[in-house]
Length: 325
Image 1 (cartoon, rainbow, N blue to C red):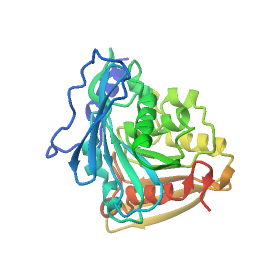
Image 2 (image 1 turned 30 degrees about the vertical axis):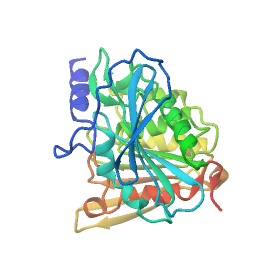
Image 3 (image 1 turned 45 degrees about the horizontal axis):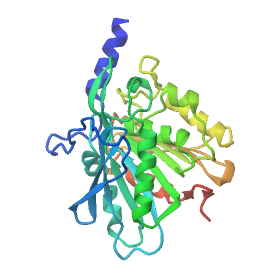
């Protein structure tokens, strides 16, 4: 038992991803608010060119999200990408760490980028400045993050012309766990998900109930010591192979994937790309297994591939109805 608690402590102390001591912490005091528990009255203030911070009260907690708008000359309905930070991290750190915003600089890439901020966590097990309530070590959280994300979708849809068939979620670590949680519990809104260094908690896995075939992309390192590739019964995390098998089975894909391996000898990395095809609605389930990568967001210079570019290409292939013709 002592060993189990030690493992959990080390995980909680190290988790997050995207942390940077040079980045100013942008988390506001998320104290309980005595106003209406779900007022849905938001205040948005421009922080940078085409990037706003929007604050509102959700379930008596002050919450906010950062929203980056498409190029002003972009035409038609905008896709929406949620990019969720890791445990103890912030929306701003995730934005700077993953650089999806660089893809909004051209009018051809017509999407709205949203970085929500997780709520503080205080339970008998642990505490943190931020988290996503997705099971595992966050059990006991009172934050209803599924409804929070759903509320953000509603608020954004009232202000901008969005393509409701093209709403996606990705994230780092706890943000990856939450993306799977959304695929299971908000699937009427979420078209596809991608997880980097995240997995599915036992709670998400056991209660998952999607409403449509769901494209899934996973990027994970074999040396990840925080979210082990082989899972952790102590931390209640499913193995990545279990996660892939769940979505392969749910989507009725081929039993065996098509697999290719690319070696990057100059940086000492090897990337195994597995694709499960012939799924319902012509979607796919994909895994980039990176030999030698730890708990990181994959970058081309360091790991052979860019997780950001792979996720962007993956999301652009599907909407909520399946492969885009």
